[in-house]
Image (tube, rainbow, N blue to C red; front, side, top):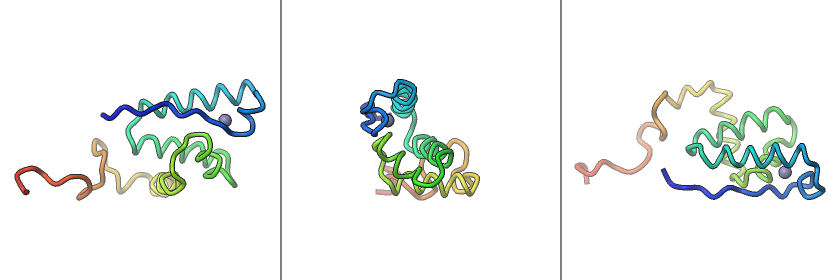
Length: 102
Ligand SMILES: [Zn+2]
């Protein structure tokens, strides 16, 4: 797995020194750094849904993930991961072609 730098949140609450929010956002980003790409967008989706209105934009600020990545995570979450079978990081047909097929 590719190493991912830990994102530092620069949301208004973190910048104004709200300790509880800073801890939550830094731990969220620490956790994100250990997840694979789909787990990251699903975690962002859960957090975004928890916030509700404006959540996707906030999660972009907090995590540095692309807005479309978070939207996609929310769609997958809403669909109960039906397009993401257990044990598969990329969707069927996604990713690089097998070497023998080249
Ligand atoms: Zn923050």
